Image (tube, rainbow, N blue to C red; front, top):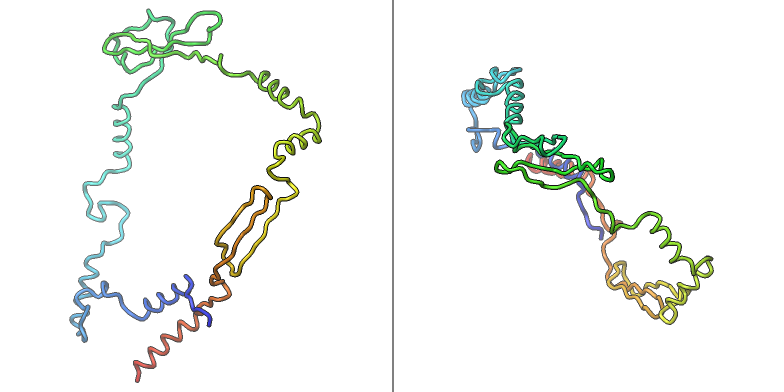
Length: 245
């Protein structure tokens, strides 16, 4: 026997049928739960619902909101906040003597002083004013003495591959490395057991054989059928028929 399931689209159809046939309780307000509703009660409920709606407007003031900020006021507030925030500024100076530690905003700057030597003509020392005192905090000189050059790396690769000048020699080196463990020709895979779900996978290092064991039969797509839209609608036909009787 096939198992019936309901797809997402069919669930939407089912929900739409409910929404079209029945009013939501929340939308009925004070009328919810009553068996009969008079014209006066219905009119009063509709009036209360309409009075709670705002008229269409293009401004906050049109909706009665008088304390909202305009786009201009928001932009101005953001600009003021950014201007008042502390931030560091890099400044190039000719020498340490050119730095005035008592200048306005001196503690908000990073002073870059050229090293001045021929080898480091494009390098800088960094200074900051901390508690009124000029302190060296770093420099832009990078030490690469422990790093290999491109030429050195290329030479190392050439030296490492030198014993294997041909493809045949490389293959032989690989064969020698795995000799006694497995051979490439022995690699294989096999499936055993019944069912359509793999419950165990084993690998034999000595032979290079992989074995997958099947031990469970699971439902497949062909075992499941969906409720059709016509079947869902027929449910409501039966409900209407039963209600009429």
